[in-house]
Each structure stands twice: as C-alpha cells, then as structure tokens.
Image 1 (spheres, helix red, strand yellow):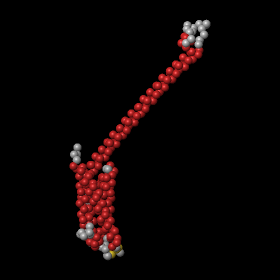
Image 2: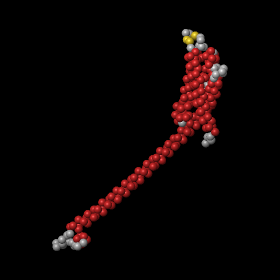
Image 3: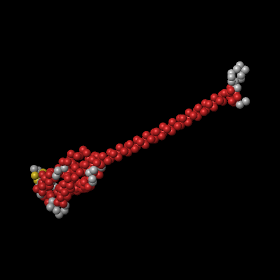
Image 4: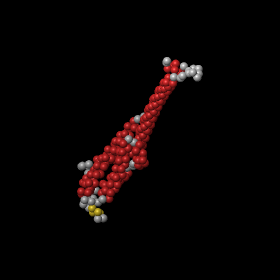
Length: 227
C-alpha cells in the first residue's frame, strides 16, 4: 500500500474504513517541511533585500556627506579668496613697511644696533611709522580667518598678533633713554637693548615672511576669473 493509498483509502468515509495514520503523519510532516522551507527562503530573501537596502542607504549617505563636504570646502575656498582680495592692499603695505624697517636695522645700515640704541629720535620715527600703518581691515576680518586654509588663516592671525606686539614695542623703545643715559631713574643697559633689538629684527622678518606669503596668495586670486 502506498502512502497515497493510505491517505485516500477512506474516501468516502465509512465505518469499515481503517485510516493509515502513519501515512497521514508523513504527509503532514512533508507539508510542514515544505512550508518551513518556503518560510526560510522568504526570510533569506527579506534579509537579502534588507541588506541591499541598508547598503544602498549607506552608499547614498556617504555620497551626500561627500557632496556636503565638497560644497563646504568650495565655500571656504571662496571665502578665503574674498578675504585675500579685501586685504591685498594692506598686505602689500605691510610687506613694504617691514622690508624698509629690516633694511634700516641690518648691520651697517642707518638704524643698525649702535645707531638704534643711541638715537631716541630715530626710534620715535620708527614707532610713528609703525602706528601709521593701517591694518584696520585685517582686524575686522580676524573673526573670519578660521574659514581660510591653515597656510593662510594661521599666518594672517600671527601677522596681526606680531604687528600689535611690534607697535607696542616701538612705543616703549621711543620712550626708553639712550644707552648709557638715565631718565626719571630709568636706565636701559646695553645687554637689554641688544635683546630687544634682536627680538625686534626677528619679529619684523617673520612679519615680512607672513605678509609676503599672504600677499602672493592674494595676487594669485587677483589673476583668477571672478566668475
């Protein structure tokens, strides 16, 4: 007797029928196995679809993030160009002023060390020139320097800081007595003058270097098509 015979032998049902329950059990088990298999396939398919959807979402998120980052970089570059264009005239003036000061203070020049420490009028002249140098635009743009690239933003910030210190130093030097003299009980020794002079010359060179770098970048911007 086959399993099929056991399943259908009692049809139509009667009191003399003897059902082959083992065959029924096997049939039910096979049906359950098929349902389980179909369920497993469905679950696997859904998992595959979910994984594909997740990967697609992640890829789209990465693309959006990359696009947003690119736009931010382009915007920062645009703002840097605007800042450099706005400050180009002041940067050129700082380059000329610092170059002139360095030229005067180097060995054998008009305001070299021996002349610098012995002439209050010369120091006063340099102080006046330093304070006449206009960097008002740069001061107003200071809060925006962070949008610039480090090569530009950090130099602009340091340039302003050095200029502030240098002006303050020149103001002090113009009031100091010449070496070997005493004013109001205040005397500046030669060694102290030497340290101050060396620091001044070193700072002026850094001011010139930063100003030249930023001015060159501003010049490159000027050569670009504004559109």
